[in-house]
Image (cartoon, rainbow, N blue to C red; front, side, top):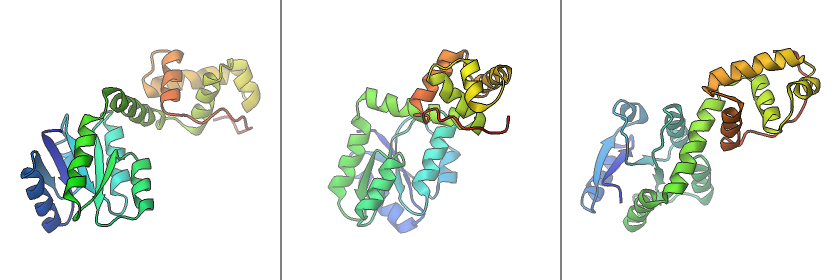
Length: 207
């Protein structure tokens, strides 16, 4: 298990009881009231345990992506509905626990987050970082990058989008700069890791 767990919960009593429980079950819990407070001392390692309310999980995953880093996230709430658990996991949480409630399941969820295979964590990290870089692109640039993934030439991409090959070339140069790619192959790798949608040609005004 990770030695350090960061708990994020706006409810002071629940946050205190959670930290007390964890500190008495083999790990050190550092409590935070909200994501903004946690951001100010962003750690290099550990598990984040966050109360699932409003869009907390999505907001936290956005912060993780923006920092080009990777920290495993476990969400929790009291008696969560299955759909709520699925939504949190699809949003990026590694696990979900019922708290206040099942302490053993909580410890297990944290343990699983800490012992996931290096390959699985690395894959999640790569996708998170790739997404954060691809998000910098405009819609037109994403279309051109998708065409690059398909192996299309500047001429064919331009033909499908009704723009000149020279304009495609300029967009390619701009998108490489935006995402910090040294060459087209690196940009294509990032697109694949971020699961960029397939190239779907449609005629738009040149951007």
